[in-house]
Length: 217
Image (tube, rainbow, N blue to C red; front, side, top):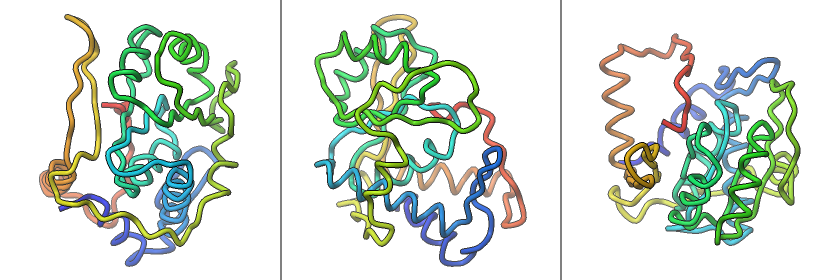
């Protein structure tokens, strides 16, 4: 069981239906899958593979959605970091999770820059410039996300998990009682969670889902 099959199913069955709406940006299921594959291909070209950790300090943007499929397509593990944490806590998470790549929204560049200065790891930093964010914030990475994607292959064939108990995500507590503690979830965990949520909520192919909870949860 792996949630990666959900993306293939949606893109194969409803290729031209809208998959992502973010302000003026619109992607069909075919376009969304292509972008996820490009991300996976670009990550693999930079040495990311099974068991590696890709961290993300992102808001609820298309790039965050793409990371949720693009990262595990390579066999790597997604670490979506709480955007409300301070620099020392983020630094601890990056070190403990051994992040090899870090996707950073320009909105959070200030605190992430401080975290990187304090961290021991030196991940490849990819800047994400949210089209809906109009506030201040600099680019601190070595490559911009769209340029990174441009080097990827939309025909990338994803890595099949070795088994359904393979880790797919690494989440951390908020560190209210001690340093954040990491919890790994598996492909099986997330397939079951998604399926049960859809059944419980009665989700159909006619519904539009508004994700209001921060996706790092």
